[in-house]
Image 1 (cartoon, rainbow, N blue to C red):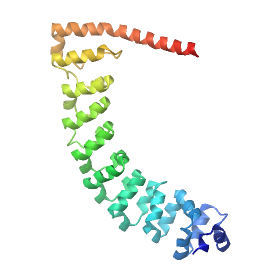
Image 2 (image 1 turned 180 degrees about the vertical axis):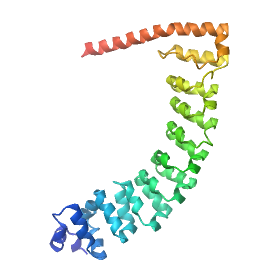
Image 3 (image 1 turned 30 degrees about the horizontal axis):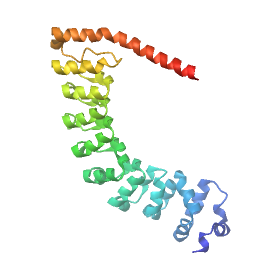
Image 4 (image 1 turned 90 degrees about the vertical axis):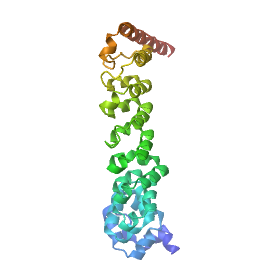
Length: 289
């Protein structure tokens, strides 16, 4: 066995496997006995040749039954190609520890997991704890996982824009939407109309990102107190103040109407001021150069 770990010994005993293209190498390699193949896989030169070229590895796993059970080789292959998991032996894929290890190495193999793992919310929670990037495979999460409040809360905290993937049974959940818009105001676009009409949710989204105003439902702000807070938010920016976010009854009130019109009047001046400041900054940078 010691001599077989020497590359020069390999070249002497199996010259047909050297200086040939990948397809010929694979065909000649598969002609060897199981014992001989096992010896080759103890050598880093051949292991890297097989693992790094994912085309060879996929072909090798398809044609060689025993290699489907080689956990070590499959895990090394997963570093380069998540589709390797699909060709692993069924008995291996049934093992929870094997599936978790695969997700730690390459979360993109999630789409090839067995349904028993995909649909197990406890398993998914554990997988996310081990590798947070598993969340980025949400497009492949089954409906029951996307309807799990605890799991979706973790997902939203990782990326608020994944509110788009939440199951319809949770779309009307106020706390979940609030968690999303407090982290990214643009997540409001994925909430239903009833939620986008909520004053507190809409105000939270605006505080995070003023440009999320275009996703707020028409007439969302009805109280004078909340509307005044919205005006104050826009007072320090050059972002145009949208009219549709205030209800018609509020716009008809004299006190708010004057305050609103005053803010609208100041908007063009803010844009001019913002442009001049930006231009002066550019001139200063050029002059310093």
